[in-house]
Image (cartoon, rainbow over all chains, first blue to last red):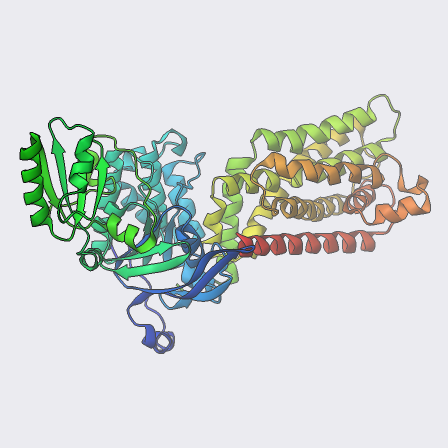
Length: 360
Length: 250
């Protein structure tokens, strides 16, 4: 894997080892991650409840859920930081409990906080990681330089991390996770708490890494992020996986949940009651100055809205028909609302959760 | 990537040691508990008391190796826990034993450096009737290993600030000073006092250093070495156990 630069090549294994490995892995060919009945108890609390899933090699897999759903616990078990109470997991065919050194050698981890050594420089952080993963000296220096260039940090390689912004620390953290030429990259809430530019840049980088063949396991509570990046999404709630599918198919499943969103120039308090009583409206939600009317028949509701607004003398300033968002899917499946990120500007539309396309 | 050889593991452990040396040696808590505290204790105990150098110098060296070696782990590990950098080791292709070995080695080098320096200064100021360098260096090396492992054992309990580790550890470290023949020579202790002193690793460090500086070992060199090896093994074993329990629990 080159990640857009020359990072050297893995040694060719001895032929016996190769045959043995092939036999060993034949049943799980193409699977980067296999989790079977993975369970974690914290005392009496069941944090992760017998979850099973596969991630294909080269796949961008999203693990979506609200805070406390079990996302980080799952990632900690998959990466060998925490021992599962029950069940098993393999990374590229290696059992994380029984063959931890082999499994860990093939993965890179970016945890939910940037766990970099702030007293060290960006260069030293990468070199230390290379040493920890047993990367030979020449290769680790070549790789560190390549990754710092890729992440636009090469010019600042000699500076201590302490003076870096959050976004830069995050990029160093991702670069550290790639020092061992990892085959599977675990990203735990990689853009959480970052400014817009950093979010967009990190998304672009991970997309490129995935395009180059890297398997990515992303945990997030940001539906839009998961929708934009992932090939497939697993939704976890209260320790259980409630759905696994592509973002589009998850939306498709929820075809029934459609809505018409309308905003008026000046609306009195009675409007809410009036709209709720319209034919075809199953429920209503007031969102700022907009009214979202849920329905399984948007065209009828549209006509009803126009008729009603003429009748009471209201001037509509915007009307949109909306398809189901991943948020709707999530709500339907879990009965819980996703955490919303604080909007920071108009360009955040693509980043904050809950944005929907007007697919009618 | 295949299974790591012992040499690979040693190299990775050494990388942890070097990184810890760069980050934690000059931390205020390391200097406070590793250098200033034993020095202050030594001065408060010796100033104004007319003690022979063959008693003073071993006490100085034993105290400094004890405090310095056991202070690095309790500074490094809780901070790394809080900043989640400790997770880097747990998710890296290196065994827990090698991680702990790397951490222990950082304490060993700190303890050896501080105690060797204090020993040299002590000998220069107070003098010494006889100096057996191999025995002195061996006793300092073995003791620093044991005391560093002692510090790591306390740091392996999942606390997230050095203060949380240092407090309970000092509840053990300070009493050890009183039962290990530093303030009252072992010869002058009652039978029960000698029995209690026997189960303190610091007693055996002091005993070995006395031997290296021209006095006799009270319990005998073989006993001293055996006890220090036994304590080191116990501390490393306990550290590993605590970490494994934490990994199961967290």
